Image (tube, rainbow, N blue to C red; front, top):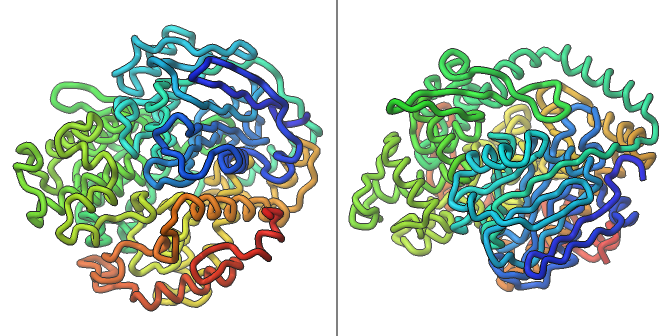
Length: 604
């Protein structure tokens, strides 16, 4: 088998049974790899209605066919499970070096099922697979645990860990790897914690066979040369995603004070320029990456030094702007704190910002917070609250379930500014003057996340008040962008340095011998999108059109300040967007895939 590891590893944590089976050819043909594998495996193997924190839930870890090969950005891996945040299919991908190591160990996917009787970690050294005791690591931070395991096992092991938040089943707990890469979204870290799995440590030393090495090498050299000659290459490598901070603010798209506005007055204090001057000590790249966008930083706070990869743009947006943290040292420290606790900085920032607004409005008081004065811009209150959340202490026990469930408990109108869709907190783009971006959040298969369809640039190019045609663009992006997660590559070479998507079918053929056109690959991506919608429908008896509505703030409150001050998307325009979207997708008026579409995709 060319390009693939060739096997699926299944580990039953309850009984200790470990099995290995060949990766099915039909799974490869129809679902390619990565999130395609995870979506299909979970849909087929999970019984409808299971508890995300029950023993019947599974965690699937899957690489792609290009993972571990020397093609640009081939370091992406997907973690997936039934999400405790959304009670439906959830996944998150990360970069680093784990995807390549799994392939070198001979596996395309790892399935964790059941629950370990005590704190454990998974040890994989090629064909040697063990469930090992993790008592000495339990309770430790995610970054600290990776360092301990590297010391114990050796630097050659690639390791994914959870922190205390995952152990305590915080519904937005993340998975960490490579001292700063995170699979942050949908709470897969909490599912691992519920299964008593602290870490997965992998070492692989097998070779990968490719169908046409010379062609793959030629394509790679050409692609890297094109990336390096792109006008945005130098800026991207210098600042990474932090370079987006100034642009987003100038567009009025930077979420500020729990999305009350779209521009943070102190945004330049947390920009990529300031990071370059004050915190960044080196660049950091994932496997096979020619555009080293990771920024390893150091700050000193209260006499201690903290090292962290970041802050990335999303952290700057959801902790910097949304919580109004206006100091690069405080922001970097907050990034480190979330990483060590094992918390998604997007949801973590959003949850604290929501609590800050509730406190500001008198919905919660000092009595509720245990004396913590939850003021926007106060890093001390952020520090205290994020620790309470990670440990489920006091009001942190409520906030640990995310803004949707917290709003139900707080009441008093807080549901209108709980910034989430389907239970997942909205990532870093204010979109009341960006209808395509709003629609992308509304319809994203895992909840409100930008990585499936970063449509805001289309809003700007096509006209920010325009509604017509936006649904078609969102659908186009929802097929293309997630395709990168299927083949196991980073999408940023395409977005930031202009690498054409036409490279990927050519690289896939050279690597695997499988001959797809780009349109055929996009059809595979569309198949996964519809499968995940079917997962959502079967898990929610009350499923309907309302599942795709944004929070009321977006259509009831105008943007308070900045370039988009006074903007709002009318409710009738939201309905128009959904009508057009559903029609183009071949779904009914409630967003349910029609039989003709399912037949076209081979799902019936």
